[in-house]
Image 1 (cartoon, rainbow, N blue to C red):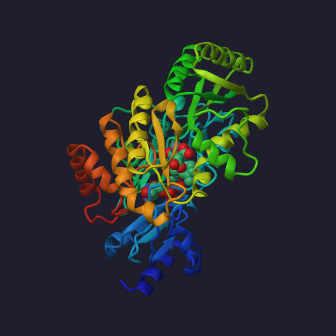
Image 2: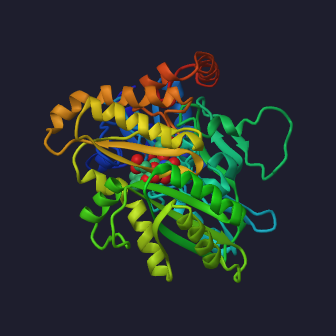
Image 3: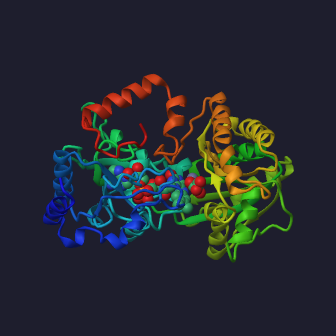
Length: 469
Ligand code: FAD
Ligand code: MLT
Ligand code: ZN
């Protein structure tokens, strides 16, 4: 179909405001880091599910590939078109309505383009709590969170997006609308089909809305910043605090000294609150629905025990909301700060929590042998076994020379991950970044089942082709 005819037909469906002007397209054609760049034939922004369905039907009939996109904060290149100028970017950002709030069922039904932060605020207005929390929450969308099965900093207590979702509405690759917006916690009428679309990275259809779980609002919070001499101390500390506080331990983040040093160097106002530098830091958060939960006392008790046992070198417990925010800024700023240090390689791996110290020791040794003075920016949601084992170039190595080492570095990290029976993607997904590695590291039987599902639902291969599979 000629460009003009196609554009006329798309405008006939979504109206002139539903197509992004040529001059404004570039924001939709590159990812957050500028690591993946493509060229879209058109960027289309439908306003409701019926429009999504009609655009997808048109594309299916004309054999045009679609790249669904939300806030475009994904870290694996999954939302970016290829450079053929033949794919349409389907941005869901205009679909940002709330369909229903049901505090008695503890659910909220929203469209895919709702920004995560907005959803958190909506839940708060309803006197409830939506726990998904991550550094990009001011820009990422619920559709993107679902399509990547996002995790973040509260998975330890509440689980990831799979566990927060009860129902889904999706447009299938032929344009059919699947109305799966059930608000049920129990439904054993066959396969759990919503789970197919969660984590599918837009390869099986376009998610247009979802029913999400809400929770009681935490009324008290205690947050601590802790210096540790070794990673095994962090694992012992998680278990010590959990023994004391149970599931009131909401978050446990680990950060290497290098990660924190990048943040304090590059992000204005960010300062390590402890006087002496340590090899590792942990950010611990407890929360409770009671106002008088004495969380600060509990945290102090746990930290004092860990100090006596030699696991904790020093610690500060936040005594104001401002201090809590300052501690989280140190943690959430790592991604951005790392961008200031030149090219980096991201690895979002998952292993058994107990194996984390051994993993770090083995991986560090491999990388230091591969590229001396390489800067290892190791941090992450260690409470649930998710490490961001990110790698920045050595100071005295050029970006080009570092690029030549990139695949050897990533291969080495994934080999070490495999030696611990881990996963090469904990929460960011596969996208383009890990597609080839997934072929090597994912069980061939599982890959075969995934391809069979893809061929069944999308026989023309038009839904986000080249991503994940
Ligand atoms: P996009 O980037 O637009 O898309 C991501 C994928 O989902 C693409 O494959 C796209 O095709 C598909 N997609 C998007 N919308 C739809 C839809 N409606 N239907 C079908 N497919 C769709 N992630 C975490 O899990 N945990 C973190 O802690 C975390 N921290 C981050 C911190 C920073 C600073 C940044 C920049 C990113 C972080 N991320 C994190 C990654 C990213 O924010 C998440 O992957 C997020 O879920 C992506 O949402 P999005 O709306 O931006 O999706
Ligand atoms: C984070 O937790 O900060 C992100 O998921 C990690 C990253 O940006 O690599
Ligand atoms: Zn993360």
